[in-house]
Image 1 (spheres, rainbow, N blue to C red):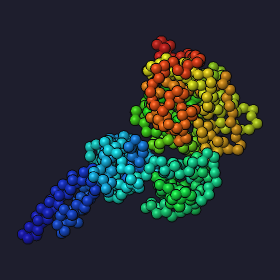
Image 2 (cartoon, rainbow, N blue to C red; image 1 turned 180 degrees about the vertical axis):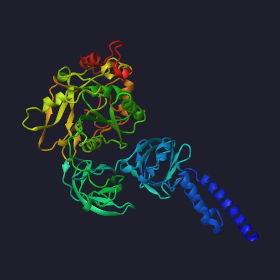
Image 3 (cartoon, helix red, strand yellow; image 1 turned 135 degrees about the vertical axis):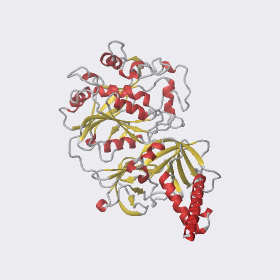
Image 4 (cartoon, rainbow, N blue to C red; image 1 turned 90 degrees about the horizontal axis):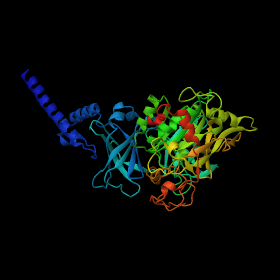
Amino acid sequence: MKSRGGHSTWRKIVYGGVLALAIIALLAMRPGSESRDVGEFLPREIRGEANRVVKEIVEESHAINSKIDHIVSLPDNEFLFIVSRSSARDERIVKDLAKGHCYLRFPSGPRPIAARIVDNLRGDGGRRMIRCRAIDQQLPLQSPLVATAQIQSSDGKITLGSRGRSLELVNWNRIVFAALAREEDLVLFTKGIFSVKKETPPKRARCVFYTDNGVAVTYTRVLGLAQEIIRCEYPPGQGRSRGSLVSVVPGEGTGGDAAAPSVAVYGGAAREGQSARPRHLLCACTMVHNAAKFLREWMLYHSRLGIEKFVLYDNNSEDGLEEAAAELRNRDGLAVEIVPWPWIKSQEAGFSHCAASRRDECQWMAFVDVDEFLFPKLWLHSGAKSTNATGTVGSSPLARAIAAATRNRSQMVGQISFHCRDFGPSGQATHPTAGVTQGYTCRVVKEQRHKSLVRLEAVDRGLVNVVHHFTLGQRYATARMPSWKGVVNHYKFQAWDEFKQKFERRVSAYVSDWKEERNIKSQDRTPGLGSKADKPADWERRFCEVQDTGLRDYILKTMASPDKLELPWQS
């Protein structure tokens, strides 16, 4: 008994020491450090027990054992960590990683690069996307670049890592970044691999599907490519599991026989075909970057015209977009959905994704920006009046405009195009307190490029779009709305502090950023400004050739409170 009890006491002492050393080792695993076998600190006889204790503590605290699958290098010294599907299911990861820090350790680097978390996004395939911005260091310039990765919440409770593996940093300007399953094909959204204006038959390109552990197992035909969209044939039997990686082998150029870098996952079986009429007659889709302050005016006005749902592709906003959308849902009863879209200069791909993914939900989609307001003048005062903020489906102004534009046509109408009228600063030095429709009332005479309402079933399978209008299938035609019936008011040239934000980055893949000395005469540019965001002395008086108060007066008459003349977005 004595020896047995003494042996038991000895084991307790040893295990107590193991536990203490395990905790010390855990505390030593600071952000940016490599994960180490705790046993290397201990005598060989008790290493196994020490590692078991550490593993239990780690799994209980969620310190490690979660996986970062990819690192994407973005402009402005940012990078995107894509967290595995199994880890992303954990609600604590979603909640606790709202704030914290990210770390990259390079094999030849003197110390890890530290960055703060600026976004925690919902990704495709059930993954999470953690966007980080380096604090005071620049990413190394050598290529290819590999690093181990780590993310830690501000309270230290959650740490995600690459499990000691070195991951290649995928550059945002050459990547397969998203995949969308349709009944007839799998659509890949890419950057910097192909760029053709019209759908082109592929030469040697192939799509490649991977197993869960990254082994290429199936190659299929490329059915077509247009702009930066690739349509893939499905694998035989569609046997790949949900969440498996998919890419493309270009088959031409330098490295043409190697698969392009990809973070896109294949979502399993194709969606079923459209079995019923879409539940919404009209939705709106746009891409936003730090536009939260404009949403309420834009959405409340357009909901009155008959738009039933708003789909916002969030291009790295940091101004409270989620909170603004939640208020519009809870306070105003609007249907608002945010689609995280961190991919730079990819507006056309975002609109193609929206058109393809919303076909079963929306019959018509308005592709307009948040500084653009549809103004169907002829149908504003006729027919049944709206009884609430969203209007009555079928009797709303836009519903009547669609009915009129598609009636008595020899060919089915798949798209209705409106000309744009560009408004200037109109004497405003700051953002108008009553909103853009009230403060900007002077415009240029010449009408500009058009924006569209699109029947989603009419969009050509190649999903090509330019300046908010789409290439249509052969059965469909575009109807152009005469300006006396309806236009788009484009509040393009606003007060300087708002307008100069356009110099940060343009969202289109096919226009130059305004800071670049390229395509200075492009219609996307502002006449007389060049490539520097220097305010002209007469800015407030520019782009003012004719007073136009039509939309302002309509909104005041129909939406202002009778006692205070206050508009809904001012309260």
